[in-house]
Image 1: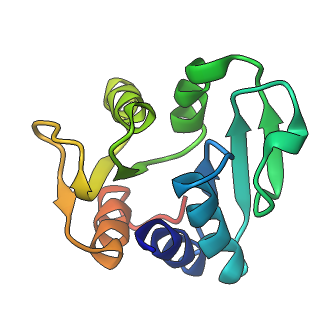
Image 2: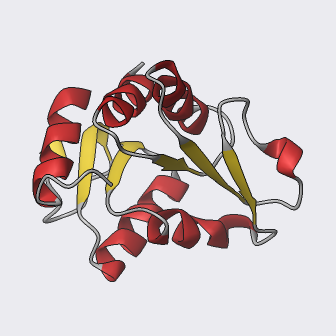
Length: 136
């Protein structure tokens, strides 16, 4: 899927992939990163390391529920938003507040002024260019 491809492409470019550490989109991005030999970090909402998906190398147990979305964003250099959940929207807002570059992968949340990418490749290239080419 698209999230898995984003994870793989980021890992191939030397980036560490940070997610919320649970299932669905988060697991897919982590799985893609691991398939490319990358490193993954999962910022968990709960109080148990065992909640992390199997592709998380480093689990950060927060016990702070949805507030962990701020920690996910603050732990990275940029955000590629995949999917349309409320958590994704919260992360976009936190990233903008913190001054982190954000790219929304289509189809995704509609947020004025945030660049959008049609493919995982375009999303990764755009976010790396916004970072000045430095691997995060």
